[in-house]
Image (cartoon, rainbow over all chains, first blue to last red; front, side, top):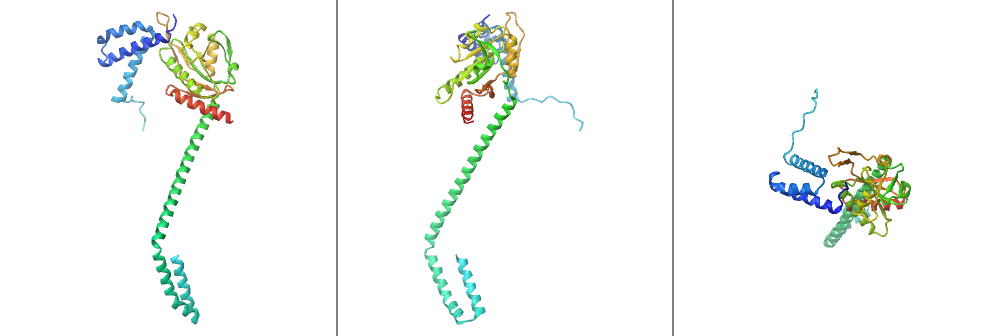
Amino acid sequence: MTAPNSAERRVCWDARDLLWKCLDANHDSAEACQKQQSHFEDKCPAQWVRYFSKRRDFLKYKERIQTEGFTPAEGPRQNS
Amino acid sequence: MLAMRGMGVRVLLHLQRTSGTSVGVASLRTHPSQLCQIRSQSQGSDPLNATVKLRTRLLVSLLFGGGLLGAWAYVHWEKQQRQWRQRTEQLRKVALGQGTFSLVDHTGRRRTKQDFLGSWVLLYFGFTHCPDICPDELDKLSAAVAVLDQDASLPPVQPLFITVDPERDGVPALARYVKDFHPRLIGLTGTPEEVKHAGRDYRVYASPGPKDQDGDYIVDHSILIYLLSPDGLFLDYYNRMKSSEQIADSVRNHMRSYQRL
């Protein structure tokens, strides 16, 4: 299979952006954004769908850590 | 000056005590009035004196302050130059890109590292099936080269794209890919061995991911744009956070200092 050219890439990215905008507006509810999801999966190669989904998860996680903070994992106990 | 006059009075008094001559006494008698005269003279010209003194003081302060600022600016600039030189030295010691590579470009012509000696090169490793990072970085690279192209005093920069996915990125795939970017961009590919050899030279990390049912996969790879000097030496690198203007500025800086050498 050939790689997407510039126009196809842009179409895929636009579909992804629409999906993400919808998810942002609907608190990441997958049911509300079924249409965008199927449009996105149609316009982008499967690998890219998986890649962008993981990317969104990572960006959400990063945002959560930056706003809510995190508890550092307990390291090995030091004998003081 | 008053102090000197005071000293003068003290000297005269001393003379009067020690010498006790008529000359000394006479001089003491005249001196206080002379002193009064001198003092009144100085009091009369005090406003003028004071203004002159204020102007002089202001001028001196301004000059001094200006001098301090100038000295600080020079030291700051010098420190920046030193840091930049140190960084270039450290990168030179790392000595990436010492080897040679032999690859095929997107027109099917064989190219080696020798072919690019004499040109400044901006090099990026990626693959054509890349979802977003490689197109972004290549757009950025193309924009930086375009900015540098506008400066007629600088030599032209050669943008290069070397694939980390030789299995899928043959000559036709590369040809299709590079035409979306800068017109001078050359794509390079080869056998897996040749590509791995080129990547190793620049310590490029590349790891193909698992294949899905379409046989598609994503190659995880390090994301850097490398700057090579006309003698093929690795001079600098730019990561995802550098904008095209920052890259163009840095390349321009390197070119200017290189020419001076």
